[in-house]
Length: 470
Ligand SMILES: Nc1ncnc2c1ncn2[C@@H]1O[C@H](COP(=O)(O)OP(=O)(O)OP(=O)(O)O)[C@@H](O)[C@H]1O
Ligand SMILES: [Mg+2]
Image (cartoon, rainbow, N blue to C red; front, side, top):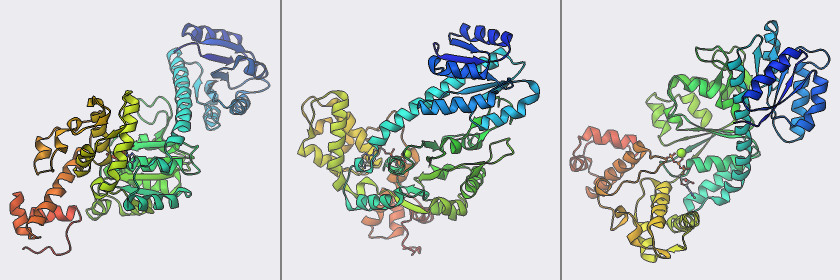
């Protein structure tokens, strides 16, 4: 990218000239000032996107300039990253300056490529922050709790609980099967709280490799390991003043669990390789589709962390337990996708609605959403008809249809474990139903041993306490 405006401040002419040439060659628009005072004079008129300043200058020095630039930028409602150039001996001062909001520093004599890289990163980061601020403003409107569709008693209970925690900074644990709306809820909690203007940072704990999770969460300091060429801000710090959404918390490795516990208890984080703890103010909303109590009982999840996260637990009910919400959801998604695809479809036909309501949705609301998106795309008329629904929704939902039916694999992916678990649970329920609760016979019907059946019932919390054979 080019055309961005860089203000260079240095009392040494040769350095001003050198930096100007280096950065102009990269396509930036450069202005140079010989002192902090002159830089401030030029600041409003030039409106730089980035300032690079020497640390030691007569008069207003680099740190004082940093403070004044930050104050002016804040008044103007924008962010101007600041890079300090420092003599070899004063690196400690420059490190202190990063705490005052300097983006980074470079020690003289510096490597040209390193400086160019830092400039690029500073400007990219600024762009990212501007985008985030704009997105936050947009999302703030979209993620009101009122935007949640569904008025079933089970959802009413969820809304009631959410309203109670919304005004607090209590940590919440959102539990539920895949696609039930856990992330949507986490956002609603954030955007409904007084932290709404702060960041909402989502971390998928299951998607980060174990050896990286610590530096992702807590950041690292320059030189912490090979390749750590600069300070990295972790997710905890990025979420300061806002909400940190720890998704798939059940997947978090034990080593990281200890550190997260500490961060929550002390409200401080220690970057990898760092020796100074930094205070952070974040609200944590965690989500899981596992039964964390079972994970705790089996020693895979720390009990102390569980209690820290689970100050309030919100259970998202599966869609099949609230089929009365299906018509409203179907209507909502029909309208949404019809608008997106520019199609004149207003509703689903009664017959289509009946099929939609008869299906158990192992993938919950996300699956319903996918079904409707596809139906809207396929539909040629002005109402959704059964012929636009995927095969698996036709007729009742016989065992095996999941295997034969067409599988939905949305671009965003599916949660295979959760889907398989749903199918597994439904078979268990069905087998117990047809054998009137006789576990030996149920196990036979499913082609598994009694022990295996019992294990699965415990796993799903379906054992009624009586685990004897028969
Ligand atoms: N009650 C609802 N009203 C409207 N849209 C909903 C509702 N519940 C879920 N959705 C939509 O369904 C999709 C899935 O929701 P979300 O991503 O929050 O589920 P999740 O529980 O986090 O799933 P996973 O465990 O697979 O990550 C999203 O597009 C979300 O906007
Ligand atoms: Mg999710």
